Image 1 (spheres, rainbow, N blue to C red):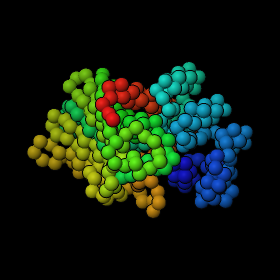
Image 2 (cartoon, helix red, strand yellow; image 1 turned 135 degrees about the vertical axis):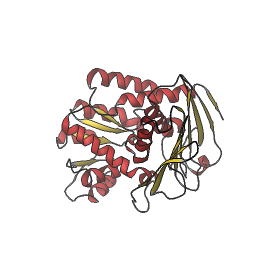
Image 3 (cartoon, rainbow, N blue to C red; image 1 turned 90 degrees about the vertical axis):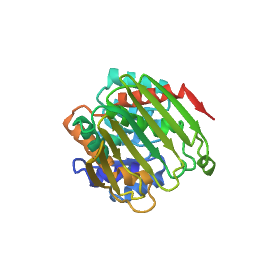
Image 4 (tube, one colour; image 1 turned 180 degrees about the vertical axis):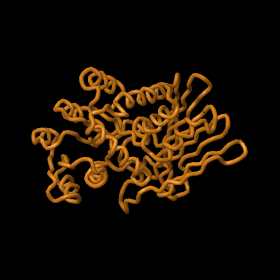
Length: 329
């Protein structure tokens, strides 16, 4: 992720100068920096970066258990940061961190929920707001990897690690919090293919809301035929479907259907990154770029960020609600 963000910041936004790459692995840091510019500085710690004074904003893509410490050091040094999800490794720590930020630095952190900047999902949200399918009563959000988490990957659990994106998407689309949640999880195939330790390789989260509305979130490491990201939004007059899976990773469709006829069809061209990159890069490449541009723009203007730490907290509160009502083995 840090390589992707570094390249986008250096080449795509046009609103800032990439000053440095920080990596505790010097060889990896040098490799990323060398692929961008010969004179790009490389540091091995956040402390070295702060001492250098070369930057006033940072993007953090370190392991989850480092998020809070790295973000706190940078923010207390006067920087604004874009932090990859999730906030921390637990709900209790999320709450502590948010209390600290709310009290001391309420405008310093933007959380990287790139789906809020995704073309197909933004178009789906506009259709909802325009009343194209009437009152929405159900949202189904699915994300399925084609492989297990890589060897050595550290996960807080498949729901906390993966579905945090889906949960935030649901909350963003419907604009409210559920009153209850339940989860189901199982290990059925891919976990034995990796040294990464995770509670489940398939999981399902059901959300109950007030006002005759529900949502379903499904995440998996077992979609062996390719990365699958699909969202269905059901309303009283029809439904919207974003991301029909057909193994065409660079061509994403948004479709909306009324009771008897189609009402909208739109195609979105994604960006190819070549071989050897994580599969989610292709699906969300333009969204990552738009997210970074928004972050840089807000840093330049001094305006509050559109996606704050509190959005990460509420997503984790929903997941925790489901995990407290868990059926799994």
